Length: 186
Image (tube, rainbow, N blue to C red; front, side):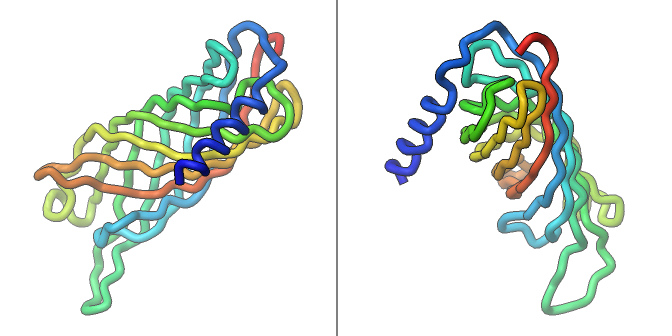
């Protein structure tokens, strides 16, 4: 596993060379699937989100973001239920290492972030899910594809872990794809 991280880090460093310039700014959106991990109170659902991208130095980009997940109804083998799927809204800040703004070509990257996760489920109220905003973190890997200095495609897989009452956590894997647009003189 350490070799994989070392190879991925080298790819990021080599893909970001040769485009030193000033700060960059962009916006983006993404859509995908959100897969609960070790959760019985929901099943897979959809996710979409919006982000701003601020690059202070090449290869390091800050991404304030908001995302909305709609999970499917929980499925139990033992009995039928009428519980609807839950919803999650996340307000976060991600930092990417790689995927520079305005860079052309293939751009592998790593992402890590913190967020406030707000889970809700109207059909269960506070019985199964206490609701309210909880602090959490995320980490993952992605691939950017610079189509032009103004546009790039972005695909990432990110694990989200939100703390919950009683010391547990809610975990999910978000697999998303999106489009970014960049402003200014890239």
